[in-house]
Amino acid sequence: MSQSSIIHLAADLSHIHTDYLWRSEACWQGYPYYGAPDLYEDCARIASRGVFDLLFFGDSANTSENHGGNHHAAVRLGMRWPKHDMSPMIPLMARAAPGVGFGLTMSTTYQHPFHVARFFNSLDHITQGRIAWNAVTSAYKNEAANWGYEEMIEHDERYVRAQEHMKVCCALWDSVEPDAIVFDKQKGIFADPEKVHLINHHGKYFNVRGPLPVMPSPQHKPVLIQAGQSPAGIDLAATFAEVQFVSRSTLKSMKEHRATVDKQLAVHGRKPSDLAMLWSVRVQVADSEAAAIERERRYIESIPQDAGLIELSHMYGLDFSSLRDDLKLSQVADAVSGQNVHWGSFLEMLKIHDPDITIGELGRMNAIGRGMVFRGTPKMIADKMEEFHHESGANGGFILYKGLEVPGYLREFVEHVVPELQRRGLSKTAYTGKTLRENLQ
Image 1 (cartoon, rainbow, N blue to C red):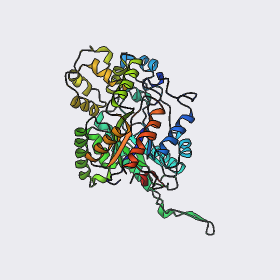
Image 2 (cartoon, one colour):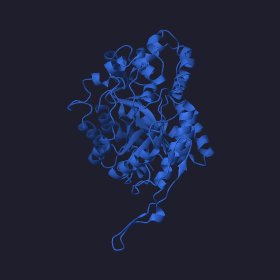
Image 3 (cartoon, rainbow, N blue to C red):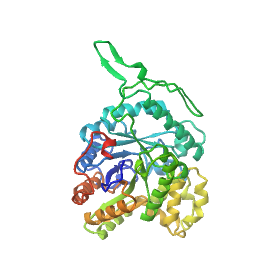
Image 4 (cartoon, rainbow, N blue to C red):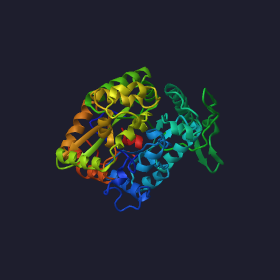
């Protein structure tokens, strides 16, 4: 990717059916249920009208058991549950909406690199070069148990495994040269065997002979995405990724993160323009900022009092139901750091919140998600996006975090904010390439 005044746009569709959104009367209106293909095809069409580069599906194969010591709270209230495999949706969405790219999550901890490499090559063909792989290291106890592990692999070791995993995947994609396929009917030659190679990888975690038994795909390999924000995660992104998803709450924190990543990129002989940031932001369009805040207040009132605490339990591996509501955020830091999970994002909370904020107060604030929020009129939101984009290095763009109405939040953004961004020359008016990688340039 290249540094540019253009703001690349993406949307996170990972949790549009969960996290209490199912309670909203405005969600999924006109659709039989959240898993209906029509809903996702329409999301893709809306995104295509807004010339979005990417629609993204995060994933983890777990049912949270942290809050209350069992799965009851998560299942009863629909908190990150259920989680269908969204990969079958991608071909349907790709045919419904030319131009849009699609990001899928697969784990370097639990899924084998040969399977991952072959799977993404196949989807790259089906989407005509519009697929991306979000490589994750998986940080949930129940997920480890589902894959047959009695305990989670230690945090930094998960990243050692991820480094090897992604190296193997890249070697497999390279094992068939771009011009290996001959298709010479007269000579009876399908492919040149001199251009198809064994990789003979023997490592700490994986033994893979190769080659990958595939035809080269339109992008050769998927766009590589990584979202880790710990030192090990940043190093993995600096080694392999082309895009990083980042959740930050302030412009100062965004700048600090960009500077940290740029330093690590240099260690690996890469330039800042080699790795773009898609900053996570929740956008609430309304007639005014006050109207947007009121809309959020009504939503928070409609969900359980402990909704945010259940989410915190899920993210950070502690049972927040067992803690006093008046306990200060700073007082749980040591306990969270010992859980072997999302320590990087917890550190971000410690930086931006008053250390004396109680977990009860934080829970209510967290009820509709952590991170950055742009609220108000289309002009107000475009002003913020323009400021934050340029001040953080003008290298990437924004990924819309889940809104309060689905697919309404996406439609509102495309119909009201995108035209303002386009008027300023900040957002594309048409797709410039055939593949996702080309459109991200």
